Structure formats: structure tokens, C-alpha cells
Length: 248
Image (cartoon, rainbow, N blue to C red; front, top):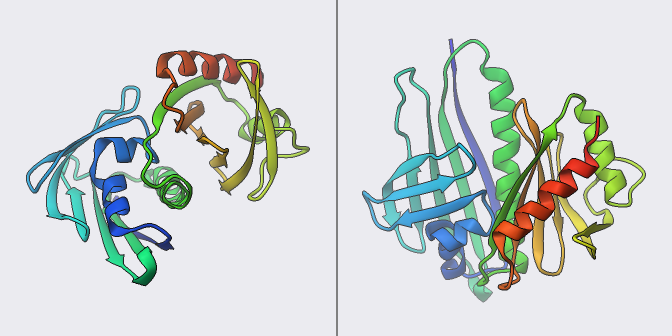
């Protein structure tokens, strides 16, 4: 059967079109809000590459209008599956911008509902992180940090465990002030976004995100804006933190 879809996210952001373009059309920019490590071969006909564990998609750029429009993806698999992304930027007076992201595609099979739910929530959450990045860290580039926890059998319990690790009495909610300790260092922040499958925390120098891995573990997918951060060391620390937090 399968399912065709089109999802739209839009926001007005206190960032210039140049800052938005850097965030969506360069590897270091995408590293600062999306997931994993990214490379962009600029220009129409170029490629956007993402490396997130074993997930390594490559998308051809089909629309490249700097400061205005970026389109990539749309390649069809043999079963008809595809995903395409279109970003539109509109500059406003005072140095702000309106950013719109349209995600469209096709999911094959009769069991597309679960994947679509995760994709919809994930897409909205990543866009919300883009907004957070451009609002608080525009012009800066992050070190992406990715770590995977142990398999999760009970997600409701896992989100409650995360809340406890953040100093909360329940699972995180948007606006919660939180505190955690990583590598012996206390960190304070605020929950900037949360949904059924994801939670994001903003600190003075990082965007920390916890993602519900599709039929898998809790995933730490962070963006650290301290230039002295060593990704390998940070990923080891976070993997240990996840192992100690999410116990069955």
C-alpha cells in the first residue's frame, strides 16, 4: 500500500538570511543542529552527505539559490521509497528571516504508520533545534557528539529515568530547568523542546538532545559549541552516562 506525505515547518527567526543559509547549506552549519557529521558539495548537482552511525544517506542537490532556496533528495529506491527536502528563506526587516522546510516523500508497505509517526516527530524536532540554534548560537559551529545507550524495553520508564537524571520528578517538559553531571562537571540548562519521542536541552554552550531510537536505544545526539571539545572523549563520556542512566 504505502503512504505519500508532505510535512511543512515554518518559523520567523532572529537571524539573517546569511546565517540561515550557513546553517542549512554547509557541513559545519548542519553539524550544529541536525545529526551526526555532514558534508555539502555546494551547488546544483552537488551532494549532501550525512554520517550517523550506520545511517549514511547521500542526497543530490536539485535546487540551489543562495540565501533563498535549497532543495535536495528525492532519489527513489527500488520499492518506491524517497524523501525530499526543500528549504525556503525570506529575509525580513531588522535582520530576521522566515524559514520554511517542506519534507515530502513516500513510505512503502502496509506498516508505514510507525515509521511515519517517528519521521514526523523527528522532522519537527530537528526543525525546532534549527530554530534554537539560530536563535541562540547563530554564526557559531558545533562539535557533533553522538552516543548510544543500552536497548530500551520500556520507553515510559526510560523517559522517567531521564527526568530523574536531570533532577526532575517526572519525564522532562518544555521549559523545565534541569541539572545534570557529565564527567564530574555539573551542567545547568532548560528544556527547549519535547515530544513523545525526543527531548532537547539548551545550556550556555550546547544543545543536548535525547532521541528515542527506532526500535533501539536512547540516543544522545548533541551539539557542543565549545571549540576545545574533543568529540571522541565526549562520546565516551556520554556513552557511560547513558549506560548508568538507563537501567532496566
